[in-house]
Length: 89
Image (cartoon, rainbow, N blue to C red; front, side, top):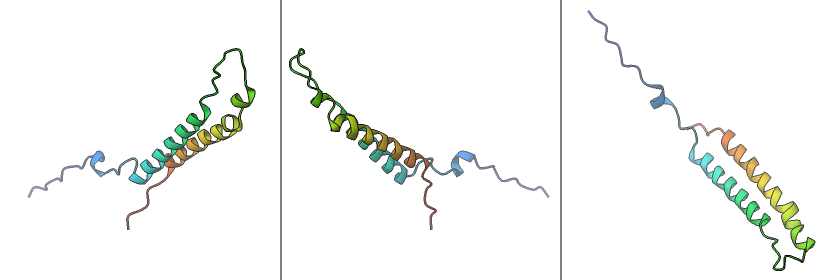
C-alpha cells in the first residue's frame, strides 16, 4: 500500500498581499500631501532680476507651511507602510 504525497503548496500562493487597499489609500494621501507642500514651496521669482523681495521669498507659506506639509506627508507614508491589515472576520 503506497502512501500518496500531497504536492507542496508554494509560499507565493499562500502569502497575503504586501499592501492592502487601505495601505494604498494612505500612500496616495501621503503623496498628495507631499506634492501640495512642494507646490506651496515653489515660486518667488521676480520679474526684475535687480529687485529682491524678501517678503515674497521668505513668506510664511514657503518657509513654514510647505516644509511642514512635506514632513507630514512623509509621516503619513511611514504610517501607510507600517500599518497592519485588519484581520478578516
